Length: 472
Image (cartoon, rainbow, N blue to C red):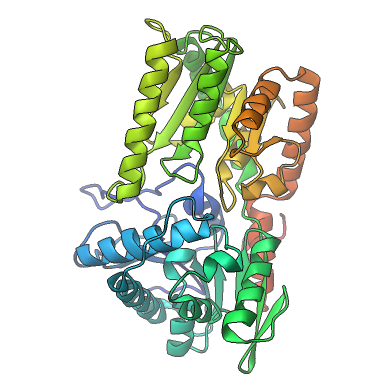
């Protein structure tokens, strides 16, 4: 059994839900998210990925993909309901996203969360070689670092939270707040998207556990746990190259023609989630149409909303509301062959996304709260001619980096409308200046720079950095 000195532990394996008859698997790449961030890194540094394969029942044996060993962890239907849909996404997710929706608390959910985290820790302990670096990912697995340290004290353990980490007054609502904090503190390095999240964590550790902490270090027994901000990024070069391919350029040209050849195209690409601000965005666009500031023949909105967590009641309700609103807007403002909103719910492959990014004169990324939002970064990387306006929520982690975007408070409907109009009517010279500055920033702060920053703090031997190469 081949093992590796780097083990990534995440809720999901980065593969398609189905495996071909010949046993072949492919990377599962969705808009933004963990897989898009880690995929290029792991192709450079062969590793083991521990995660759930997507079904219930026994864990399947899976082949390697691009030299990365896939080690699957089994989940039962009860695990899926109570751990993933329950504690992770109906308790933690809303708390971590400013309680946009009311979190739910059920004791059986916590029992399942502990059970599944223990299973992941045991699987990781089994596959990690002596002295390996283990990189645990995200809110589904916050107990794994402490459990793994107990099982394998020889490992160097990192934990990275991709979603926001809430202020103390929200986190304190959690009945199991102390256990969650102690779970994360099992790591040698706890990473967040933004410095404010690290500050929130340090405050809570002191308040709840009584441990001495700064925004950089926390004393735990005889160990020193480091914390900090490591804003995740994308493979900028890969996206730019993809957007420049002849077939993608041609696809973008055909897409614009299929949209009716409008003067301007507004694009949004989201998971169907109540944190993404989809309803607020649709309402703002509807009011611009109603007041004549935008005309359907000249401007179209393309809303991609990929279904997510469809068995969770809040998400089913959201999808119904969004689809009703899209229908209302199209019924009121569209014409035969000219819908006001082109609403798409199917996932797109990377080439199709790149073509959509090239078509969009304005990219509207307006979540109510987001840890980072890699779609915003992908759009910037795809604008190889330095055109295109990025409308970006102040509450996306990427707003701290892409400061030349047209920043907006998505909770302010009037402000959202005015910012959208400003992006649509912006002077081309201003648009180009802003886009060029953001593209230059991303080239300096890409996925390789993120990986090197985090792993240099975690892997003191620098062995992984050597495998990643010296360029960044």
